[in-house]
Image (cartoon, rainbow, N blue to C red; front, side):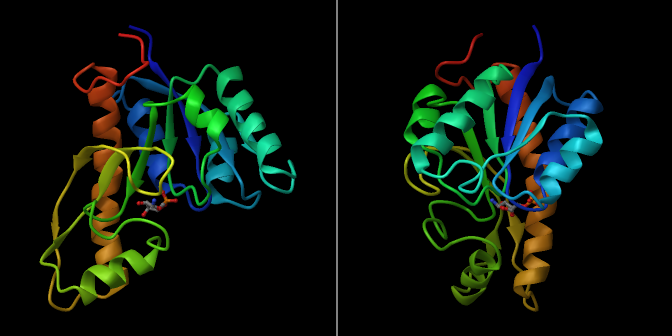
Length: 204
Ligand code: GRF
């Protein structure tokens, strides 16, 4: 079967995106990065995409004033590059209704905590790990889930667990979780590529 065509949306560093690109290159993932979209023209994600020779698009409220126009531009870029599965990787914006409708059941996100705990509006970046530490959790870890209209809300596809250690700071915990994010996201995509996880609307 032809490799799965992936579209990425990322706002910052793009280390999860890079881990997936590496897995494709090393043959651990039967997929192909088709396009990278960022709302942030200075993002590491766009720089990495250009370095990798992957089509890179800066699409934001600056390039497309008005949410409808931006939604349409994002959806058009994904379809133009024949994206089959959309990977949110540190994307700080909500997807618009047109893109969600076109890709319903085929948009994935990774969150750095064990959803449904520590998710939703405001739970991003170090705030997530700070909340985990304040709650006295013994474990944390990333969640890969399907995206719907609400933040961090759609069905969970996979999780990984790491211990929370007594002297952890948000930074040390984030680093331990991020290492697992890089492994889990690529492995979950490979399970999708192999048909072990069936996504609604995806050819098989
Ligand atoms: C990750 O911690 C991810 O869980 C969250 O945003 C961060 C993105 O990091 N959604 P990176 O840009 O992939 O390095």
